Image 1: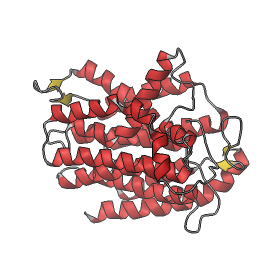
Image 2 (image 1 turned 180 degrees about the vertical axis):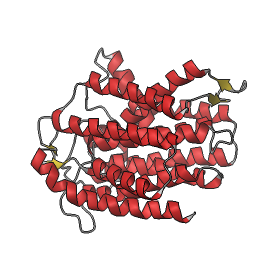
Image 3 (image 1 turned 135 degrees about the horizontal axis):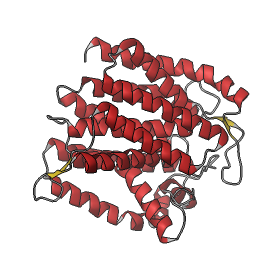
Length: 360
């Protein structure tokens, strides 16, 4: 790794820590806090600045250290707008339709400004490459942006989960980018975000010297999802790609499966897809009697296992149609496996009282 990406990574972590220190009292003054209510039973008002600190650290480090070509300038501009919208939503609860409209518009801007869009799904069906034209590819890209941003946002329901799931995806991407020349910026971005998340995760889990809990907030979770889908598009759609499109599904498998399963369930029950409920994977674990720590370990382990399957399939060039069929097979039994979550409880150590059961 050259000196610039390494400097970025170190600077992103340092600036993110400084931003966390600065933003905590600011959050109290402007009431950017998550207060306990009928849906959330965490203890006390918690600052929602974890995502803001990670983005601030990364953005400042990138501007000072890295080259800012047109594509990445558009990406960071769109990310900044998303983060600001997320922060306002954290403080004032913006309408879901407004947030969705903003994601659509920013997806269009990202495509128009960077020139990147999903052009192919690869050989998913075993009959040759699935190619798209500009219009269809752009529409699918916008759908992917909306899907990824909301998938990671929905994972922000128990301490450490959204940050840990992000690290699984980002480190998987970093590994693949490190194997293929021409992806130095993508490697730097994935590692930069990962390191910028470390101060937030430490505060969120209250480890090391952190004593005050911090939550990521919508500003952080939607930025993470947006950044990951940007990295996936860059990695799969290049002339000499870092990975095949099917591998992208495995890297974000668990957030994607959880989101799709929730949306299908809400539609089947005649509910709005944008209204939160308590049917996410982490809620299932908590209702089955797991502590937050136990649920976190189990879910992150499952996400890591799925990502490793995707990485091995990429490294050993397992046929794309076979990897896709396996992915669909796992998703088809996902709902049934949720019903067996309680069976795992017998193999876990003693109970621990959960302090936070947010709806996401």
